[in-house]
Length: 224
Figure 1 (cartoon, one colour):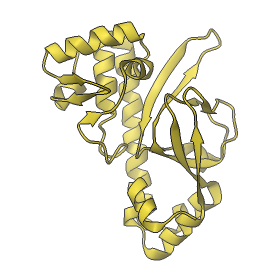
Figure 2: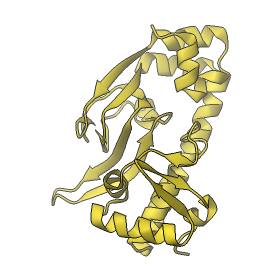
Figure 3: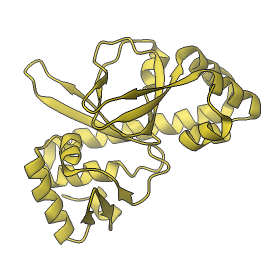
Figure 4: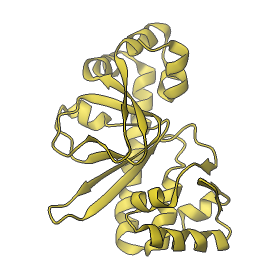
């Protein structure tokens, strides 16, 4: 059983639970580590856990039968995902792969459903989470079809700064150019060119081991 203060640190949703709900949540969570490029699960798998990223970075997406990879979202520390699949009790419709060594918190389905049925605070969180995730995927569909590589990368980086989906992120993101390319669905070389362009336009600052966001609103609307 994980400690109460540790749960509150890694899971923003837990901060609105009462003591009884916290105890129930603690009892239903275990942690597991994954290595760089390891699949956490693949499309079609039965993976009956609601999942949070404790440390590391993962990519949610699919690979078509022809081998083309499409990224849906990046998953940084503090992100929780998979609530829709757990609620519907179905196989996963997407892949999740660790882009670097990643540690996850895994809540079993029975604990998730108990909180869903008994906790007002937990349900408030889920409504906000599902709404934001829907907006994220609508945006992905829009800019994936209409924007060039630099704009897609800009929007992809901006999506990692959603305060509901990624509640504890600062304006500095520890991420490599290769990881940014993977999340944006473009090569490392194209990611490098796009990042330099965004830096020259004053939207972000490239630093050793990451990027610092200078103008988040312009990143969110880049390419319009």
